[in-house]
Length: 393
Image (tube, rainbow, N blue to C red; front, side, top):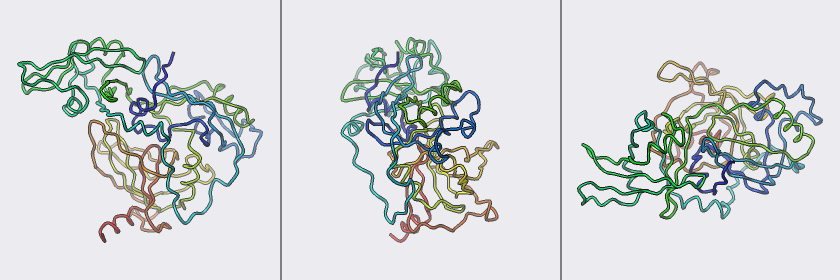
């Protein structure tokens, strides 16, 4: 059975992959179109003849009744399971606003997140080899592990680390080699075998007070598909106003289809149009961050609001093309702290506006830069304004 995980450990295990952490009594929007993307076969929502208007079929306003933050019994991956009750929406989704409303203060349980120190590392072939050891980054060893006595000929200690299911693993932590480095030796192979770790999975070491925990992030891939009937039945329950349950794995590469109501309302107040400039922070597979600069190429209001924003394609260094049109519109109004993971990079790429002869557009309806969130990524609307203000200051 999945194990229940405390919020602070669950959040550290997920990192920045989860834009929204659900809470009981929160008002949210459920996006059937996003949920349909998990179906094992295509779903034409219009053909399902929902007993509601097209607008209501696209977004279902709900209140969260129950939240379970869990760890998968087979993979240790963090996920949530929530119970939702559709409820009437008392106001328009989109309304003009001359000022950005500041986000509410975090609830007490989320303040505890700051008590967790953590460090993640993508496993190398050597790390994931059964019979080998784990090369501990120096920053991880010095910030999370108890200090070694470097006066000893061979500094070493035994670490007791608890996984997300409450199982305690013991590792021998040693400082040796030429040049000397931190290693986990005895006990590591058993952990690799027990968790079926492979190259490019990530291990997350966490410390709460003086207690050590370990979580696992599997190599990012598209989520496991669900049966078509299961997804359609969930949609129909939502459209009919009955309680329904959804499960979401943040790090499986699928789009969040339950989004906080305030976040949806806030982003739809923006005047999205071709040429609106954005600067987007994208988290890479190895937790590096790169900035992508560019502008909206088109807005498809027929898809309102799911996947209505389109961005031009950009070529990566190896000649492949990353289609930014596939980024879903899961948005909120404030940035969140970046992961304190193994490495960060301020690399940047430029996106060109195809509607302006391939040159970046300077047109914008925004009077000042606004920071929002898109699929867990920081996006700044009209970043040129901020750059100009910084130069003046």
